[in-house]
Length: 50
Image 1 (spheres, helix red, strand yellow):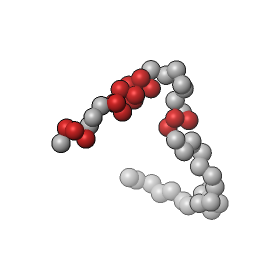
Image 2: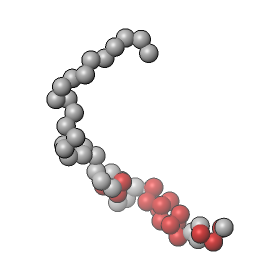
Image 3: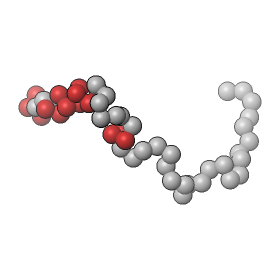
Image 4: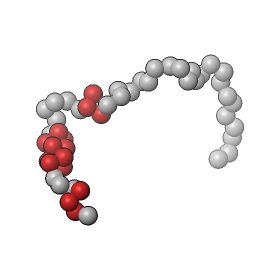
């Protein structure tokens, strides 16, 4: 990449709380159709496929 970027002091705080939820469930509404897909996949015996 051409060009240079300068480091901005104070732009990053490693102790700052995360901006995103810790769990994907916090992002997906209870009535979202993807929850039905997740429930189906969790019900499958994937360990038995070995």
